[in-house]
Image 1: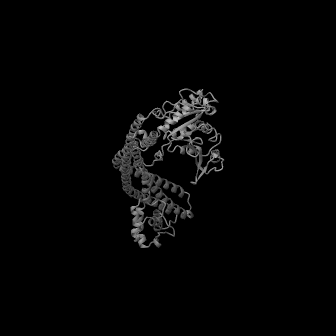
Image 2 (image 1 turned 135 degrees about the horizontal axis):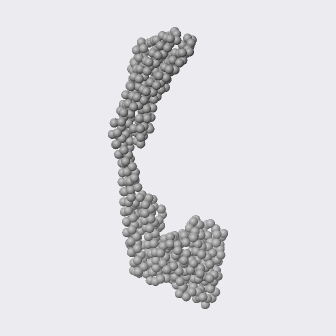
Image 3 (image 1 turned 135 degrees about the vertical axis):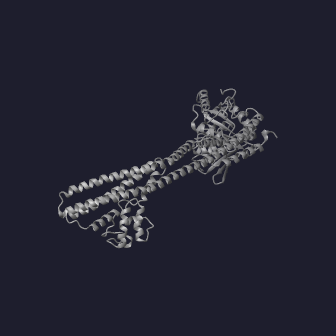
Length: 617
């Protein structure tokens, strides 16, 4: 058995298809690149006549078969019509629901296939059976028109290409080949190896210029028609009108040259079906390779797109390491400097407070004594609160400077601040909102010794609470006169109570100066203790922040490394698949070359077209 006698699915070609199917399965995410295999059913060649609506496809088939009224001319058909051998002559209409209609009158064809015919919207396809010996080895398929791949007619025409042996592409002289036609040709060439270009309606136009223009258009469109698909593109000029006028005119119409092409296709039917199957496999192989190429490019083939990220992480790690060494040397000095600033600010405020009250007492009246006493208590409490606020601000600023550029630094500063009682909040609120709260009242009050402020005041409060002097804790709330007060306010009110009422301005002046002096000592002591505690809190905050930041960097590098390992594995997988596709392409090319070497002219080109040796007269 010769190659020309073998079916389209030889063992070699079947093996190539199975190889590609396995590769596509391994690729995954693959659209329908590889269609069903051509069956090559029957011994007849299936030749599909395609072209835009109105270019003369039906007239061309009528002229080929020398039957002017066989196919309706000028009517818009809604399906494709197969014209083949059969006895007796009849029409067979295949309906969408699976039924068939048989009609012995060929003149009724337009009723069934016209877009506005009796069975409009119900016909799947139609067949015309003729007792013409020239159709013994081939069937001609008349299509509605290309109309672009997205049009209904375009889809019908593409459907007609299933298991087609060859394609006759029809253009009308005077019409430039359209974008829709080029799109259709590009798609058809994925599965059809043999295309014959025919230029019709040459009696009505200067066809030589039109022929050259269309050839140039196809050649120039290299994106759709690469050179390995279309070699030596020419068009075969045919006059359907001349072919139907008389036998003498027929010989000058170009019809005989077209029949020579069709007969050659019929003889090489099995051979061409093998080439078509190879073309289908090769087209899918190229699609898959382009898909993998694009995917590899997206993944950064051979490059490391995250290299800069890793370098940045390394720089951060280096900076953190240096910072981890530096902050221990600088923190003590920063805290001492801040404490000095807070103490100096307190001294300035104390001096200003003395001066203000000296001025006020110079003109004070005895009746104003209660108001002045209350003002002194308020001002001394405010003085302590301002010192507390200054301390907290300095602690936050130190933490921010120490942790500048460290991820999560601001959150760490917030946590540092939340570990301390707010300067404005009552001791009772602080004790309730900072669980667990000690059950022993003495332990409760002494617990504020661990806070930033109020330690000395709390120490003075404890014996008074235990002794029941003016202070009670109903239900766990510390109140004085029914009001929850800051630690300083409690202490200063107790101080005022134990000193007794100042009876005159002179006694009031003495009491004020003593109170301011005692407040200065107490607040200074609190500042010292508070900054000692602040130093410990800052050490913990900074150390924990740096440790967390270093861990984040280490985790980020590990995540990046894992991602790169995954990318590398995917790149290797893609590269391996590309290698398999390349080998498959080489095998397809080798098989195609062998088939072409066995073929007889003119079926020896990759995608060939023909011109009549003598132009129509």
